[in-house]
Image (cartoon, rainbow, N blue to C red):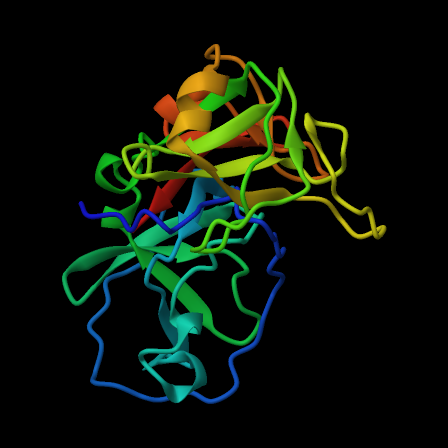
Length: 251
């Protein structure tokens, strides 16, 4: 499956917790043929599916198939890649011959479904991300295409996330440590806002001479909540949120 090397998962520079939203304008489509609903657990308790990154949502209101903002191309028809709440479900049903999970509490005024095929190994591959450790201090570049110089400094022991799709380019894309001047990256002006992983770049020479692949359990922390990933968790296709491991599914 093709992956855009500029797409980041949960280590993007800004994280927004998406709460229960609303759908403003809806559009109706053709008649839907749906099977009966099947609970996964006999006690009808919720089951956690994991994180969904840009997965297509099938939305219903009053039994009618609708689109977010009356537009099939609106981004509201996809799961938010920065959502820190894992997707949960009670169960599934077939819609027009395709198996869908009903996503719990995604919108307050519409039901949301995601095709079950997206919660499979095919869409659970984080091998293009790996954690490296800084061995010598150096100054990274800005995350813009010009990779302009910064006043930032990465220090020995800092954990960085490397986009392996960019590793063979002149400029290597990285997820840097938290911008709190406490995780091995200094030079940020702390304005009191929440901290997150910065999207930066380094040169090939900096990568070769100042970084080495981290141990499997080395933590790359990417937000103030202490959520993190390791090479071991990435190999399993997921991250740790509030101490619990969740798989990440993405297109």
